[in-house]
Image 1: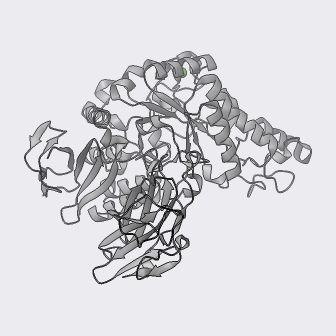
Image 2 (image 1 turned 135 degrees about the horizontal axis):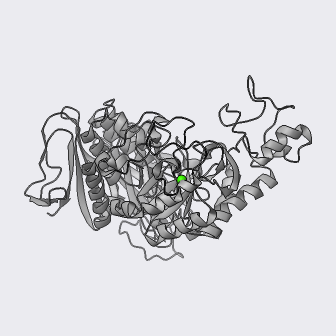
Image 3 (image 1 turned 60 degrees about the vertical axis):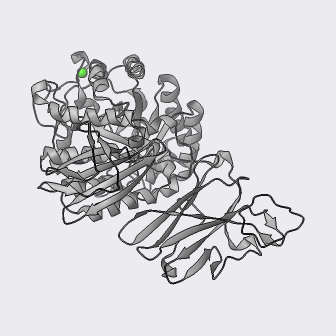
Length: 596
Ligand code: CA
């Protein structure tokens, strides 16, 4: 047994409180090494006079020589290239838990505890074991329930639809009359979104993530001038409220982009600092190293990257905190927005985000808080800061496999399994999965404009655990390179839209609603991955059903072997399949519901 590869610590995501009754436990072992993993567990105060083997919870604490334990097999729930991952959910009757692991590799059986390794389980003291002292309800990670069932649509406001020429800023170009540049404007606005509500409802999305809408200079609005004002090119506050109300009435939630890491160059506080230097009342709002402020050759104040136009806020300063927290509360309370997406969230201090969460959840306990973090985000996902992060590890695994041909089937399954095991299930259910955004080349462009590959990307996005987002226009075949190329105007003439791709996307959204296991009811794992044929089968399972999602990511027809015996309903062709062996044409996929 490779004991040095066996890993567990009594902390998230290896052990965590899943809900008020349930604790999830995971164990990592060397791939292929362990045949069987059994959880040894019990209540720390449950002692017996006899050496107990009976898994009996009735005990007499007055006569206590041996700790009473249960033994329950764990499931091998996934693997990546180096490790197997074992999983179990337990419901300790008194909400207290001590636990260890009994591991067999075919040659030997050993017990792994917090205090090391034993030949047999020690029962004279519970102190050897890993510990969850008490399952307090308030400690359970709790994201809003609605997020699990939400499919987002990301709108870059200047480019989705222009519904009101009267608010077009000077120099606005006719819709779709030119390729997007870093400076040009096309007049998109809130009225345009209102005008297209029927389109959004027809597609089936249930949330919109708006890139920044506050007053700013640029066309992308990430350089905020005033966080309490709408940029006039999008409409008034009244128009914004009208749009939010109309979207809500159509079952669509609204999430705004909060750029709290840095101000814009023209934000009044930074303007004051630039003008008055050391004497400015705002001097402590930023991280200023010297006076006067200079931008060349390098800014002498902290910024986002080294961009002088984006001075970093000092979020430890009480006035800055009060100001930004007021902003956070204002848009939730006054306009009923349902969530905040936090730009460059990882460069802002944790204490600020803890207060941010308190303020936002007090204004609306059902608000969603989503951080932009590109890496392992465990430090922000322990329940006191964010509900989720943007799942870029998902993005790169999906694009590398389906779009860029950088990986093959086994690597894809390994990478996706690794994504799933990096976070708790609570987080996996609400994590923000994307295949492209205003910051990246379009998914279709990445896929070499191959619409079939685009379909496979959408299939992987819309059947994976999490809360997926469709970047506006991806559903009708919009393409584009790295920004500004990926920010084209949405074409509204039907002949400019790929309606077949639209119907495909719409069908997947409908399936998510009809079969909750395909959305976020159950667990996700990979049951087939073959590099030779470049095919993958993903399994989704819950108490409501079992589903297999098949991917043929090769340029020829392939027959994928049945992952289990039985027959099933093909949800693409609506036909019964006598076996789960599935033959798929090149670059296609399908979903089969197991019928037994
Ligand atoms: Ca307009």
